[in-house]
Amino acid sequence: MAVKGSSRPSILFFFTDQQRWDTCGCYGQALPVTPNLDRMAQEGVRFEYAFTCQPVCGPARACLQTGRWATEVGCFRNDIALPTNERTIAHSFSEAGYEVGYIGKWHLASTGENHNFRKRAVPPERRGGYRDCWIASDVLEFTSHGYDGYMFDAEGNRRGWKGYRVDGVTDFALEYLRTRDGERPFFLFLSYIEPHHQNDHRCYEGPLGSKERWKDYEVPGDLVGTEGDWRENYPDYLGCCASLDHNLGRIREELARLGMADDTLILYTSDHGSHFCTRNSEYKRSCHDGCLRVPMVACGPGFTGGQVIGDLVSLIDVPPTLLAAGGIETPSTMRGRPLQGLIAPAAGRDACATWPQEVFAQISESQVGRCLRTRRWKYSVTAPDKRGWRDMDSGTYVEEYLYDLEADPHERNNLVSDPALAGVREELARTLKRRLGEAGEREPVIRPAAT
Image 1 (cartoon, rainbow, N blue to C red):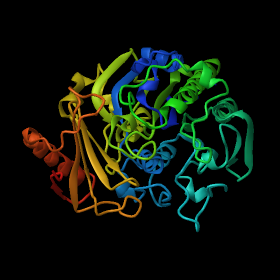
Image 2: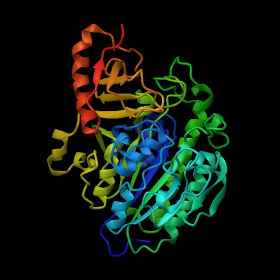
Image 3: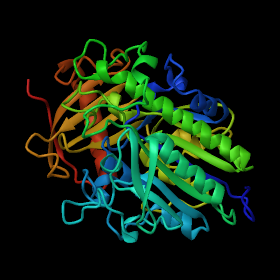
């Protein structure tokens, strides 16, 4: 069903959870895990260096919904609800005449036990402005496993499925596409939980047969020779990613069948990656590329031609990008920039000259940390006297990591105490302080690592 009475595209945001960039063929994965995404990259635009702005579920989602840093919103860790007065991308799209829908994992409704919607329907005022279609669970891993589960519709009714979870969530998205009246363009936020591990089972749950199907994988360089739990989990992890890709194909086929493919932009990315307990005691909450770097591919109006963008981009750039795709001006409160400015033949690629040469990330829960990632350097600081679940920021940080990514792409050799690189660290510390100020944080003292 084509969009009626509008030249603006519909927009589908295909959002995965805990997916590393290198699970995808278009980023170098040797196994045929993502043929549909690879095809989308050939037709659209792939961002080679895309990173999360907060490597944990709830804060990353708060950033994506608002375009602001997690500390600005107050959702600096999990289990803090998005404030009900926050303006989201759903509000902007709705005011611009879009139909707005949300399907999947929300993770922005609950705070502690007094406001616990982990296994209950999310009330309308806690849905971030998604008012036209809603089928969601606040914490999807609490209402489902890899197979079977349920979410809640807009009236609070359970909507269950049998079979693999990615297929079940996609079925709801296909139902939405088939039954909408088409009077307005749509913005659909489609939020999967895969390839996130299943919390209560303490493992990744791919489709049945994944352990055999994906056993001949090439070990990612940052995992080679490490401990962690990737040996028992990586085949299932790839199985999750392959299922996501299969369902991306289902959605693209349905858009084509409905005559909507040429008028719909799909943007595919993830909230963070996974380092498989090799950098700390779990899977994320670290400055390392294994959990910071994510896939990001866009295909549709404004994103065509098989381009590969080499500039460093962040999830904080996604909200203004989505709005720009709908012809909506970037609100002054948003911290990122529309990615359209990096795509040829934009007016001389003017944005490239002023595009940031680094990405900035806030880290919580495991620590109170902040980091920069440039093309060459990874620089991270931590606040040892603060607690990551309690404290949002700090006035004092200590240098924790410095990696030369040209010589050490897998981040094995920490140079944070190398006296020959004191000047590099000083320059990175200045840049980090500037980025902290731009994020609304106080300027801290940054002390050298203890030697």
